[in-house]
Amino acid sequence: MVYEPVIGMEVHVELSTASKMFCGCSARAFGTPPNTHVCPVCLGMPGTLPVINEQAVRYTVMTGLALNCAIQEHNVFARKNYFYPDLPKGYQISQYELPLCKAGFLEIEVDETFTGEGSGGTRSVGIRRVHLEEDTGKLTHVDGHSLVDFNRAGVPLMEIVSEADIRSAAEAYTFVTQLRQIVRYLGVSSGDMEKGAMRCEVNLSLRPAGSDEFGTKVEVKNLNSFRSVRNAIDYEIKRQTRLLEAGQPVVQVTMGWDEATGVTREQRSKEEAHDYRYFPEPDLPPLSLEPAWIEGVKASLSELPQAKRDRFMTEYGLSRYDAGVLVEDPAIADYFERALQVAGDAISPKSLANWVTGELFRLINEIGITIGDVKVRPEDLVALLKMLSAGAINQTAAKKAFSEMWETGRPPQEIIQERGLRQISDASQLAGVVAEVIGDNPDAVASFREGKDTIIRFMIGQVMKATRGKANPQLVERLLREQLQPDD
Image (cartoon, rainbow, N blue to C red; front, side, top):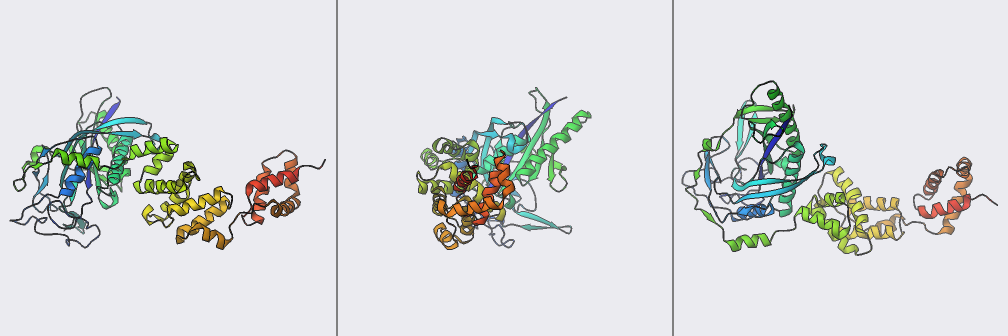
């Protein structure tokens, strides 16, 4: 029998606020000594009272609007009761029946080129809710003991819950990558999965293809990378398929993903909402949002990635692929547009895009830095490309100059002058070198005259070598062809 996966996602996003959700402790404690960003409120001491972080509310509403959600003017925080050592109060302040945002959707575009699966196309994934809560502490397990760091306890945590509209690992992968792109564009979170700023959980069941009834749902946790999301779903689909084909039931449990072994492992039986005994948080009043305030937040939203990609395609004539790569990171998209503004009509958007996605990306990826750390200013990149377009330098010299610009941040004019990288475009200077190359390579000359036209590339290379890469290759080719014509 053929089974269809039915997948819903729960994505937790740490918000980039200065302070925690209900107290004044710093929320930017990643990498700091354990238990140094804590106070009686986030440690759950008796007699303390929480105060709502307004910026966290704003960030959550911004995200809900970007995901086409309805923003609820009246909402309530609730106590979610469960007992773990990383939850100092014994309960978590969250939202349940009345979240900030609900009933939205995200249009995802699955490209099998990137995912390796043949499920390309556009799908609408429903967003059930976007709500706000506080994060837990962090447990570290060492030699049979568990250590707890409460620096993260109380950090604002936004939870995005999708409907069960996802049908493959490729779609889930695209869903979470597009979500991260949105929160980064909005500036509400770094979305850095390696630092725990974004964590994913998958709810997955199988049903016979064509059926409308859901199968038994299994939750998979510990998904700390996009690769883990895709691999864990692939594995869980195969595991549940084996059980069903063997006539065995799928049990509703919570599974953990083991990255090292590439398998899911049972952690505990799956809790239901009633297990958490939700009730309104008695220490916080209901939160009411004025319609004018919501409209103000909506008006402040920046251009979102899909809209920017489409604009890059129509305004700059870029391909869907080039535009998609450039808008992946909002800082890179800004760098590209600043460079275009400087260039005016002197450099085509396509040429600039090729250098940004080529040389610039290559070095960024090799070294592992962000665009904010790059020393090459947009105006200096444009100056380099103008010199290349004008024929003052050739492609080889441009790449040499760019490498030094990358290391030093110096403008290209200084580097090219200092290193003597200007292109030789004087035919009288090159004619003698071309004649020497022809004289030194009789076999190549004979092959060319016998009709092997591709040998011209070899001879151009010899001239470039003799001029230390400074010769204008187009001029060299013309001179070679002129001198290689047989005498009448």
